[in-house]
Image (tube, rainbow, N blue to C red; front, side, top):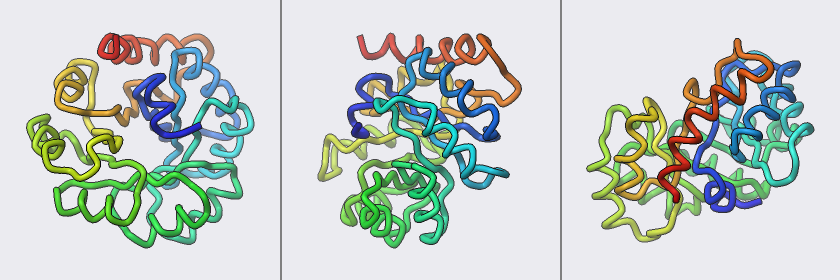
Length: 209
Protein backbone atom coordinates (compact mmCIF):
# COMPACT_ATOMS: atom_id res chain seq x y z
CA UNK A 1 0.00 0.00 0.00
CA UNK A 2 1.29 3.46 -0.89
CA UNK A 3 1.03 6.73 1.02
CA UNK A 4 -1.14 8.28 -1.66
CA UNK A 5 -3.24 5.13 -1.77
CA UNK A 6 -4.19 5.16 1.92
CA UNK A 7 -4.82 8.91 1.87
CA UNK A 8 -7.11 8.56 -1.13
CA UNK A 9 -9.21 6.11 0.89
CA UNK A 10 -9.30 8.31 4.00
CA UNK A 11 -7.02 11.36 4.28
CA UNK A 12 -6.13 10.88 7.95
CA UNK A 13 -2.91 9.82 9.64
CA UNK A 14 -4.04 8.61 13.05
CA UNK A 15 -1.47 9.47 15.73
CA UNK A 16 -1.79 6.80 18.41
CA UNK A 17 -0.02 8.44 21.31
CA UNK A 18 -0.20 6.26 24.41
CA UNK A 19 -1.09 3.07 22.55
CA UNK A 20 -0.17 -0.12 24.44
CA UNK A 21 0.71 -3.52 23.06
CA UNK A 22 -2.35 -5.04 24.73
CA UNK A 23 -4.81 -2.50 23.33
CA UNK A 24 -3.30 -2.27 19.84
CA UNK A 25 -5.41 -4.96 18.08
CA UNK A 26 -8.70 -3.61 19.46
CA UNK A 27 -7.77 -0.01 18.69
CA UNK A 28 -6.68 -0.95 15.18
CA UNK A 29 -9.96 -2.72 14.50
CA UNK A 30 -11.97 0.26 15.72
CA UNK A 31 -10.05 2.75 13.61
CA UNK A 32 -10.22 0.47 10.59
CA UNK A 33 -13.99 0.24 10.97
CA UNK A 34 -14.09 4.06 11.04
CA UNK A 35 -12.30 4.10 7.68
CA UNK A 36 -8.73 4.92 8.72
CA UNK A 37 -5.94 3.19 6.79
CA UNK A 38 -2.85 5.08 8.03
CA UNK A 39 -1.81 4.72 11.66
CA UNK A 40 1.40 5.80 13.39
CA UNK A 41 2.70 5.09 16.87
CA UNK A 42 4.93 7.82 18.36
CA UNK A 43 8.20 6.36 19.58
CA UNK A 44 8.44 8.64 22.59
CA UNK A 45 5.89 6.54 24.46
CA UNK A 46 6.64 3.58 26.72
CA UNK A 47 6.55 0.27 24.85
CA UNK A 48 5.95 2.00 21.53
CA UNK A 49 7.78 -0.56 19.38
CA UNK A 50 5.88 -3.45 20.94
CA UNK A 51 2.62 -1.61 20.38
CA UNK A 52 3.59 -0.93 16.77
CA UNK A 53 4.43 -4.60 16.20
CA UNK A 54 1.11 -5.71 17.70
CA UNK A 55 -0.80 -3.19 15.60
CA UNK A 56 0.92 -4.24 12.38
CA UNK A 57 0.30 -7.92 13.09
CA UNK A 58 -3.41 -7.31 13.63
CA UNK A 59 -4.06 -5.11 10.59
CA UNK A 60 -4.74 -6.19 6.98
CA UNK A 61 -2.40 -5.29 4.12
CA UNK A 62 -4.38 -2.22 3.05
CA UNK A 63 -3.25 -0.38 6.19
CA UNK A 64 0.02 1.53 6.54
CA UNK A 65 1.49 1.29 10.03
CA UNK A 66 4.37 3.54 10.91
CA UNK A 67 6.36 5.17 13.66
CA UNK A 68 6.09 8.81 14.65
CA UNK A 69 8.43 11.14 16.54
CA UNK A 70 11.41 9.39 14.94
CA UNK A 71 14.45 11.45 15.92
CA UNK A 72 17.48 9.24 15.33
CA UNK A 73 18.70 7.06 12.47
CA UNK A 74 19.26 4.15 14.86
CA UNK A 75 15.53 3.99 15.56
CA UNK A 76 14.71 3.18 11.96
CA UNK A 77 16.12 -0.33 12.04
CA UNK A 78 14.04 -1.07 15.15
CA UNK A 79 10.92 0.21 13.39
CA UNK A 80 11.70 -2.01 10.41
CA UNK A 81 12.10 -5.05 12.67
CA UNK A 82 8.76 -4.29 14.31
CA UNK A 83 7.05 -4.29 10.92
CA UNK A 84 6.71 -0.54 10.50
CA UNK A 85 6.40 0.84 7.00
CA UNK A 86 6.52 4.60 7.52
CA UNK A 87 8.97 6.91 9.28
CA UNK A 88 7.35 10.15 10.47
CA UNK A 89 9.47 12.84 12.09
CA UNK A 90 8.49 16.16 13.67
CA UNK A 91 11.37 17.84 11.83
CA UNK A 92 13.41 17.56 8.66
CA UNK A 93 16.66 15.60 8.88
CA UNK A 94 18.24 14.47 5.58
CA UNK A 95 19.95 11.57 7.37
CA UNK A 96 16.58 10.24 8.52
CA UNK A 97 15.16 10.45 5.02
CA UNK A 98 18.20 8.70 3.54
CA UNK A 99 18.10 5.90 6.10
CA UNK A 100 14.35 5.38 5.71
CA UNK A 101 14.69 5.11 1.94
CA UNK A 102 17.69 2.79 2.30
CA UNK A 103 15.51 0.47 4.39
CA UNK A 104 12.68 0.62 1.85
CA UNK A 105 10.39 2.62 4.12
CA UNK A 106 8.15 5.59 3.40
CA UNK A 107 9.46 8.91 4.73
CA UNK A 108 7.26 11.74 5.97
CA UNK A 109 9.30 14.74 7.10
CA UNK A 110 8.16 17.45 9.46
CA UNK A 111 8.53 20.94 7.99
CA UNK A 112 7.58 24.44 9.11
CA UNK A 113 9.15 26.73 6.51
CA UNK A 114 9.41 26.80 2.70
CA UNK A 115 13.16 26.25 2.99
CA UNK A 116 12.60 23.05 4.95
CA UNK A 117 9.94 21.89 2.51
CA UNK A 118 12.17 22.43 -0.53
CA UNK A 119 15.13 20.75 1.18
CA UNK A 120 13.05 17.75 2.22
CA UNK A 121 11.71 17.26 -1.29
CA UNK A 122 15.25 17.46 -2.67
CA UNK A 123 16.28 14.52 -0.47
CA UNK A 124 13.41 12.39 -1.74
CA UNK A 125 11.00 12.41 1.16
CA UNK A 126 7.61 10.92 0.24
CA UNK A 127 5.44 13.36 2.14
CA UNK A 128 5.53 16.53 4.21
CA UNK A 129 4.09 16.89 7.69
CA UNK A 130 3.22 20.58 8.15
CA UNK A 131 3.96 20.90 11.87
CA UNK A 132 2.83 22.44 14.09
CA UNK A 133 -0.08 23.47 11.93
CA UNK A 134 -1.79 25.41 14.70
CA UNK A 135 1.05 27.96 14.53
CA UNK A 136 0.50 28.43 10.78
CA UNK A 137 -2.62 28.90 8.65
CA UNK A 138 -4.21 27.58 5.47
CA UNK A 139 -2.90 30.70 3.71
CA UNK A 140 0.63 29.37 4.24
CA UNK A 141 -0.19 26.07 2.58
CA UNK A 142 -1.87 27.87 -0.31
CA UNK A 143 1.35 29.81 -0.92
CA UNK A 144 3.46 26.66 -0.66
CA UNK A 145 1.33 24.84 -3.20
CA UNK A 146 1.91 27.64 -5.69
CA UNK A 147 5.69 27.21 -5.64
CA UNK A 148 6.57 23.65 -4.60
CA UNK A 149 8.23 21.69 -7.44
CA UNK A 150 6.14 18.56 -6.79
CA UNK A 151 2.57 19.78 -6.83
CA UNK A 152 1.17 16.36 -5.98
CA UNK A 153 3.42 15.67 -2.98
CA UNK A 154 1.27 14.69 0.03
CA UNK A 155 1.16 17.45 2.65
CA UNK A 156 -0.39 16.66 6.02
CA UNK A 157 -1.13 19.55 8.38
CA UNK A 158 -0.60 18.19 11.90
CA UNK A 159 -1.12 19.76 15.30
CA UNK A 160 -4.36 21.36 16.44
CA UNK A 161 -6.39 20.01 13.52
CA UNK A 162 -10.09 19.79 14.35
CA UNK A 163 -13.30 18.89 12.57
CA UNK A 164 -14.01 22.61 12.31
CA UNK A 165 -10.73 23.48 10.57
CA UNK A 166 -10.26 20.62 8.08
CA UNK A 167 -12.35 22.24 5.33
CA UNK A 168 -10.18 25.37 5.22
CA UNK A 169 -6.98 23.34 4.97
CA UNK A 170 -8.46 20.99 2.37
CA UNK A 171 -9.56 23.89 0.17
CA UNK A 172 -5.96 25.09 -0.24
CA UNK A 173 -4.32 21.76 -0.99
CA UNK A 174 -3.99 19.60 2.11
CA UNK A 175 -3.64 15.92 1.17
CA UNK A 176 -4.72 14.73 4.59
CA UNK A 177 -4.37 15.46 8.28
CA UNK A 178 -2.31 14.20 11.16
CA UNK A 179 -4.83 13.75 13.98
CA UNK A 180 -4.29 12.60 17.54
CA UNK A 181 -7.02 12.90 20.17
CA UNK A 182 -9.59 13.73 17.53
CA UNK A 183 -9.56 10.10 16.39
CA UNK A 184 -7.89 8.24 19.27
CA UNK A 185 -8.02 8.47 23.04
CA UNK A 186 -6.18 5.82 25.08
CA UNK A 187 -8.98 5.35 27.61
CA UNK A 188 -11.56 4.28 25.02
CA UNK A 189 -12.45 0.62 24.59
CA UNK A 190 -14.83 -1.49 22.55
CA UNK A 191 -17.34 0.23 20.29
CA UNK A 192 -16.38 3.61 21.72
CA UNK A 193 -13.13 3.52 19.70
CA UNK A 194 -14.96 3.39 16.38
CA UNK A 195 -17.67 5.81 17.50
CA UNK A 196 -15.14 8.45 18.53
CA UNK A 197 -13.03 8.13 15.36
CA UNK A 198 -16.09 8.15 13.09
CA UNK A 199 -17.02 11.65 14.21
CA UNK A 200 -13.79 12.86 12.63
CA UNK A 201 -13.72 10.58 9.60
CA UNK A 202 -17.27 11.58 8.73
CA UNK A 203 -16.28 15.26 8.68
CA UNK A 204 -13.23 14.56 6.53
CA UNK A 205 -15.18 12.21 4.26
CA UNK A 206 -17.52 15.07 3.41
CA UNK A 207 -14.56 16.91 1.86
CA UNK A 208 -13.72 14.14 -0.59
CA UNK A 209 -17.17 13.69 -2.09
